[in-house]
Image 1 (cartoon, rainbow, N blue to C red):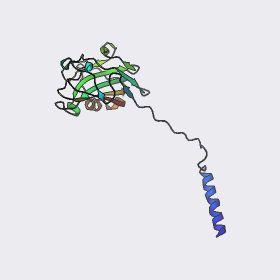
Image 2: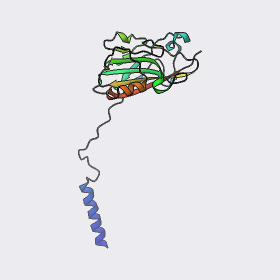
Image 3: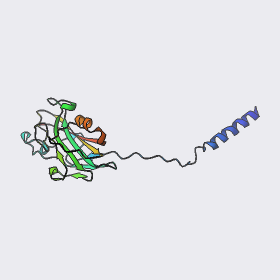
Image 4: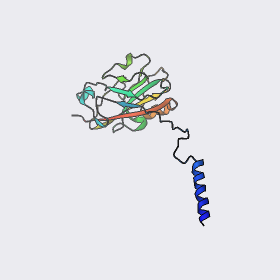
Length: 194
């Protein structure tokens, strides 16, 4: 019995030695995950209340587009797209949501968007139409509390311009350009009319 225990112990020691014993680095390294695209805003906190100045003029606002900062853009990103939408009634969900902002083909190097910045002045940028048929930022204009989601997309290529003005909800954009999307992230706020 004593001999069996000795042999068993030697076998265990040899097995651990063959496996490295778990106490030495065998040259394996883990690849860290690529940082995920991020957006932040100094205009309102994520899931916080959107101040009145960013609302539509009809709601007493100034229709000022919010400040956005874009970080952790994946390597290989050629363009960034931004969509702001609302899915609360009378707006629909998914493809029939109310679109408040469509910005396509921002340069990947554009890390900061100032409040009320004229993004149409940036070469190559496309401004899509919104729920009211206008282009550019269209602030919250609800009759009751609504939630607004800003989605940013990192794209491996810019969106090709077309003869018509595009209008995308996030679901439409993701369906039409799935092969270009490298990463996405959101920033959410709510607006309560006074």
